[in-house]
Length: 246
Length: 367
Image (cartoon, rainbow over all chains, first blue to last red; front, top):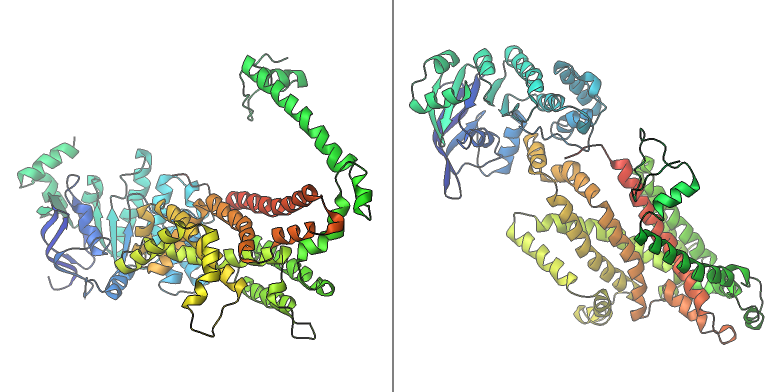
């Protein structure tokens, strides 16, 4: 792909003897929105965590925004500046207020002055619809609110790529929608490149350009959402879909 | 009237008022079961047997104004006059008598900045400046030699100021050193990690007393000829080295309690190692270990009294010197109670402060 923002070529990774990623080849176009699904232990989280090097791949080539990921710390820091990540368990900083959570990255990594960082933080808190919670601590918010703060925290860094690692799996059922709504809004309005590990198939149909199915460390099948859900090709995909779409 | 028989009565907002009368309270709290009755009677007997005697000795029959030991002995109670007579020796040791206003002011300055540092409003960069100024002032006051102040060798320092100086500097240097050791021990770099592990385990395997002896006897052997480090400084270094190892292990405990997600959250924002540690990990880890950490500080404060073994005149040693006066013999109880009170006031303040700090830093986050 000519204008690929992420290029993965023959990427392999092992946890000890366990082969968690097998010959992953994946090109992500700028602005593309990808949903990754698959059974647990299939390597989907590991895959996106390799992109901002929370995990290291052991062989193959991984290029993000023109920079190849190697052991060079400077490369890692450059890439992390461009790649935002939203975690299953939010990973907000409990000792800081919501506003401080949001201004921390811009102030210390991007060296933005405090006033500007706060202005930016309020803009994104507005966008995730909780500007009134700025002065609270994360522990005082509901799960759905915390995840929206986490999304805003990533957005404050103005990333080019957003990674979502099962953003709704740790939420109570009634809070899933408010987070998904924010994510849909983000996908529709921002034109940001998004990779999302999720089993929310409604979300995948609504925003994804491509759905990728992984099993046992391999990419088994990929297609547009409609084709993927309506006429899956591989038996493992069929089995998986039959299990999650009751 | 209540007939609640449970040994402990939970009082919360919407519970009905239980404590209807003193008798009711006593029945439920003190005499609810046969065992409770027995314990209550036993405690009452112990209190009755000891408290009146102590009060009589320490207050009622005590003498606070006697001019000689003879006068004091006649009363049969505590002789606080002895403490009054000797307080300057106890508090300031062998520091030249006429110059003792200097350690007094130095002590006040030191206590002042310590209290100031406890107030959250002053937690900003200007605190460093305040500390620097305070320490310079303390140094000038204690040593003298400038501004027309008589030079006083530090072998003449003693008593409370010395104890305070040793423990303040001890904590001030051992703490950051301990943090670095804790981080080092968790480092992924094998060289740094093993150095820290060896250091911590070595120091923890040796009593402070032997470290102090080593600092006095062995350290000079390793130094080039003609070069010598002052005895007080050597003791101070030994205390710092000793405390740092314990602080490191305590802080490591706190670091281990921080979930992996916090590190990942910080890394995903692009923070580098030191930013992550300083802004995200350490603030949370240190908050967790405030109670054991303050325990170490309290132990350090008291352990400074061990410097007597290498002939440094701290508070305890200065007090013992007061006992050697022939005309005031036999008042050691009063003296040791006085010393114990001084230690207690400091240690209890630290303990109380740590509790209030924990409360203030609480952000209501439950994991």
